[in-house]
Length: 551
Ligand code: GLN
Image (cartoon, rainbow, N blue to C red):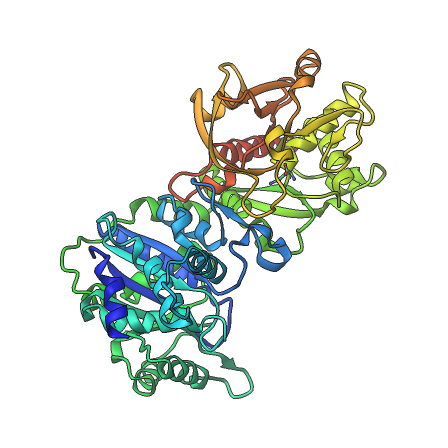
């Protein structure tokens, strides 16, 4: 055993320190936000940090998961389809993540099984320990080996005690055992429920979850307690005593009005100092959170409100549009307005009720999506925005709907459609690329990741980006059909952004409209606190203008 474990570690030229974040008691406690907040504080102190997430499910990645199951699928620069927590990491840190930052059980097993088929295990029985755990360990340590990061924070998905996360926790145990004490630590996040009847905060679930974690051989160095009420010193001491952590290492994480406040709460609780002490990091500065605080202060003191209709088919599940909602928050702060998002289910929009459904809104965002459900409602919504000069922003499927609407109602191609919804449309204005037609496997086969886009001058897109060359992230199979390009141009739709290599249309806009733009890519995936996506900023500015002129 020892020999095997050390041989894996020998491959590494360790340069980073490792922090593991586990969760207990219940899911949805916000491990991702705690991990991102800690990383933000370290970054603000001049320590470079990255965050990765290990998900226990068997899917190789979340790309094939329905948003109802797993919320939004977040796409990285290098085209990985990942967990939405990676979006939080990027939004907090303003640095890109990659394929290496999100690993699932499925990917681990796929790699090990492929190696077995290739004969790499030399006739040995392939087992969870050491083969699966070695593969996990390899990936857990990977980002810390080339000197790019001082600290690698690993969030372990799921809750301690889940059958599925056992190999991950076992690997954390091995790493905690193998690495020098000052190079690794475990932060455990739990819930301290408040019993209204007893008027008391209860520590027992935390004690149980730490005991369960300890039974696996992993001992937490810090316990972060999610709570709706502040923890007094007695409770903190009790948790420390029963859970066997240092008294100062029990941290309270009270419910915050916005996730962007959590780094400041953690700063107040000195989580960063505790971590740096444990990891023996001595070279740090006072935290510089100037930009962050500037954003927060604007976020908390908006001067007016804009009402934005979010037209989608997954609106009952907020996580499905996570990055879009966060982009609104960034852009709202930038414009000093509160963005009130009005969820409109595309399935409920008909030509007879569209006026009442959308009246009073200051802007319309037609969301990304797949499949036929709610499509006609989206097209009707686009028509409403176009005809009523309401600011319109279409993303991916939303852009495709804008193209179809224009084809049907302006070009007069009544049966125009996307081949995704109607393979037999006589006017397939949204078509499938030739190389996509040959694809039979579903996972990871869309047009994914960052692609360049060339923007024409004297267009709305140019005004928004202030550049002729940009890069944005994609996740789709279908594209604007260039056979119809001239017909669209003749009737006034401008294709202001194209892929320089393929000529594929990336941006469409209408000049005789206050703000009408559709993009084939996903600008929401690159919006961060420190660098809000320009399209969102300008869309909200246009909505603000619309609200003013309608006041
Ligand atoms: N379903 C469309 C496509 O595959 C749009 C995808 C999306 O909105 N992300 O092209």
